[in-house]
View 1 (cartoon, rainbow, N blue to C red):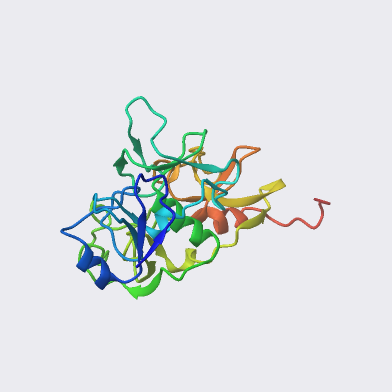
View 2: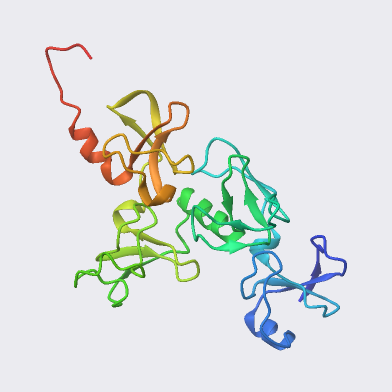
Amino acid sequence: MEESNNYDHQHPLLLILKQEQLIGYQSGVTDCSRCGEKVSAPCFCCAQHCGFYLHKVCAEAPLELNHPFHHDRPLLLMQKPPYLSGEYICDNFCNELDNKFVYHCSCGLDFHIKCALFTFNIGRSNLKDLELVALQHPLISTENGDEEREDVSKCFGCQEPLVNYTHFSPNSGFNLHEKYAKLSFKLNHGCHRKHPLVLQFNSQWLSCKTCGETSGKGKGFVYGCSFCKFAVQIECVSASLDLVVEDKSHEH
């Protein structure tokens, strides 16, 4: 263990790199003071045993995050939610209520620290936290007509039930169909020639120009143009491209 930056805590902090050290240092199960989840190594703990703990990743989270799936404005790390209720919902990822640190955008988008950083890494094609696994668990099987069940795990990208294989993170509950794991970030779409479409969160709740629906109540990914308020759900992209019929007698 070594002393480190106190990250706005009133006492010096110790850096714990190994889980065995943490178990020997703790008096019981403790939570991270920023994200509220069970603390695990590597982490920081109070040198004076006041019960203050921080995951290393939470402690080192940037104050401003330019998220690849939210291009319009940066996300700002705030100690408390900017709402009178003192609470917020991580409304584009885990949908859980919280009152601790939040990545907030003035457009109303809110993220838990870990959810923001996890999706940031996915956006940067840093998939080291994901494992390609077969889904055989009965709660997420769709072989027996379970697609309509509320507890069936769904793909974050398209909000549809998972089948066959998926990229999966055991720590965050993030599930993604394999075909959506390496989507292109920009797409030149024949139905919207003004600007490229960019892969992004549907934080503006835009309806799909192909099917007319708003996926997952504003959750998941869309290919969109924020400037033109144009969006196509990722599962509709290929279908909408098929609608662009090439006519050699027309110059455009």
